[in-house]
Image (cartoon, rainbow, N blue to C red; front, side, top):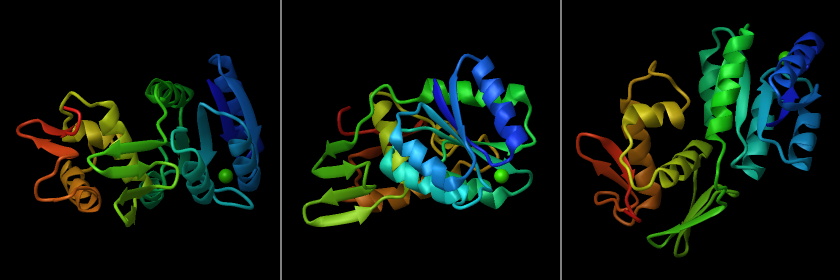
Length: 225
Ligand code: CA
């Protein structure tokens, strides 16, 4: 993979570069948020490893800007120990996963490999389903004259569900694959997120056609099925 490391702490930046390079990746590194956005958008990357606390522009702002311009580019966020709010916010801004500092080399490489496997085989910028046009670049859903904004996570959920079309997915799977959380939050959060999403995208949220419920299993992409 081509990986961009964004970390202001020189020793960690060099350590990450060596570690990822040693794992066979092609690695470049920058030390502040403005450089991260410039470099992140200037070239094609398979993964951005992004520190949260950065000079000039915060990791959260960098994440938002990169995600808005490159919805399909995986972002792994580095957060400080115990800052649960940061993780939740980071995932809300579109980070795909996070690693808490201090992390082991093994843990980081495992996450990087997982994101590599998850990297989109088909990068779609638009989706046209049941009269709804989803724009993943602008993070909007348009039906007729009405356009509603989507959060990065909602767009991510639609993209991921579409990729899984033809099979039912469990709440736990959505929680892990889309929300980036491993069982520490109740799967009820998935149901609540889908209620909100259906109000934005379905013709009739009480009778959904795009994100359908599958009894005893979870959810599925309904339109093509
Ligand atoms: Ca930092």
